[in-house]
Length: 199
Image (cartoon, rainbow, N blue to C red):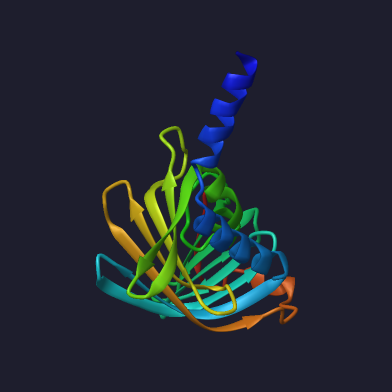
C-alpha cells in the first residue's frame, strides 16, 4: 500500500512539469545562476494598449531600477522608491515580497515555477515556457508565458492577471554582468520634492 501511494505521489509531482518544459526552465535557471546583474530596454503594454518604454536594471538578489519617461522605480530589496518627475513627488514604501511584479526576475525564474504546472508550447515557431499556477498558489497571476532568446535570457513575458488583463513586456539590448554599483539601487529624494513615507 505504501509503495502504491509513493508511486502515485511521484506521478502527481512529475505531472506538474513536462520534459520540454523542464528543459526550458532548466536553461533559464542555469542562465540566471550565472547572472550577477543586467540591464535591458523594455516595452510594456496591457491588453495591447498603453505602451510604455523604459530601461530596466537588475542586480541579485532582488535589486531593481526601472526608468520610464517621467518616473523612476527603485528597490534595494528592502525599500522601494517611486519618483514622479512631473509631480516632483517621491513615495517610499517597504518592499513587500508577497506582491507580484512582472519585473521580479527572482520570483519569475525561481519561485513561481515551484507553484505552477510547467509545460512548453509552440507559438509561431518559437518554443514558449508556460507556467500555470496550482489551485493553492499564492501567485497573483492566472498564467505566465515566457519567450527566451538564444542566450536563454527572457525576450518576452506575458502575464494574465486575476482580472484577465494581459501584461506584455518585451526586452531587448541586454547587457549582462557589468558590475553595476549598489548605488544604482538607492535613491535620495531631490531637494524640494514632496516625500510620502509609507514604511
